[in-house]
Image 1: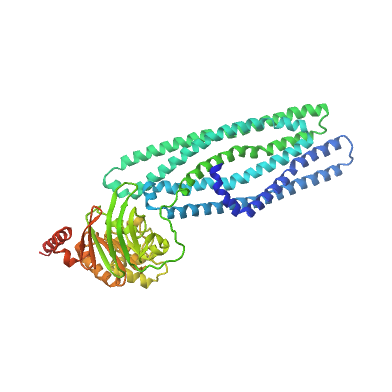
Image 2 (image 1 turned 30 degrees about the vertical axis):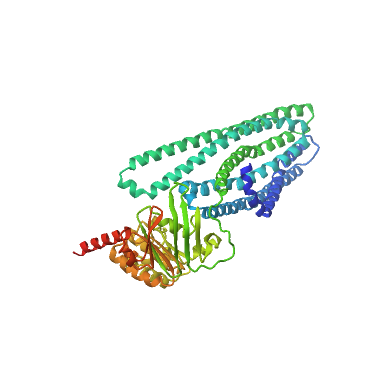
Length: 588
């Protein structure tokens, strides 16, 4: 149960709701237990009448009618209280489920990119949905039925012991056997539940990747192989589920056996005591039989609740594994910090933990507020890593990064990222309207601002051609659009934010040169007074920059301006001459 201690803070948060629920539960059980006592009264009244101690049939009917009225009244009150009991305790379980999901989601957002590189999306989704759902069953139904069972057992056994102590002791003999059986089965349930949840995560991860990469699967014609892999996973998952169910299925036959044995004991022992005169009325035997049968469901729920608790503990353990992971990138500054865009790299080195690739080695450069820096280089040279470090998606290993002449780690992380407009190399769009995708950079933006940003990104004309225009719903990851359209909408999303720092990570690779020139012309106007860094493979994206650096194998190998670098042998000159030749060939 130590894993479930994490939930205790939520119990404290909703303690008054739970306390009211507990009180209602106890009162409801008390009213429910009136029935066996009134049934005994009926037997007593009938026995007394038959012995001739009472005279007059009307008196018997009146007494029976009054007792029946009491039974019905107690049942109605118990039913109403049971309704409010469920409304109170089950509602609390939904509140806790909501809070726990928010806690997990908020923690997911704090974790660094390294975490997401090491864990599959399907597993993350399974822990925030399936596992949290299992925990909700513990904080709701399990607690409600546990209180219900404990209350009913205590009051019923006290009533029974007061009526016939010896008969009560015989009746509860099967209970220790049940306790030992539950202990043994619970350990096995816990083990098998953990395996089931692990396979559900694998299944979720596989299907999520298959649906996301369906175009690749179809293009390579590997649908049969993918289906076979899915069948293998789902078969293993089914088998593990069946293994768990087989153990859980032992509970209810055990409960039925328990109740049957208890009834036989009541009838046999009670009958002997009645014949010996130790029990005055047959009503006591009838009362005991009703008590035993009233305890049928609570006893049965002991096994069910135990199973729920074991599953919840296994699920909470999986949730805690992620909640215990400390974010690598921490916001150590609470007060707000202003960002104007001065950026300095001083002998920066960085290595990726997951691949151990030394991405940057002794990188040094500076860019003043309002300037534009272009970074060129071959694939894998470390260009995108520089942008990631400016956004503090990773922390550096060595050296220093300063913004406004202050260490980047000493800036408020929220303020730093809010001051950046970032267009990634792999444009990601949400399954929402085009308008909302652009407004993601500025939620309060009006329609005029959205259209203006789209025009600056040279995508407005494409959008208005869609049937629903800016209200067009995109497919998952923006699959509805072409690569160039996705990139341009990503640019519009960054521009509408109007940030102090603009980072463009090879975001024009999917557009033609003519469109690129138009966008760059617009960007030259928009980026005035903003610090801009453009990563690319084309000289056209760099020629208007105030400063150009060429990165190779994590190091800066060339630095200068377009006019100086085209006259120096190296990567930039080679690239310039190559693209000039290609452009000449196209024109001819």
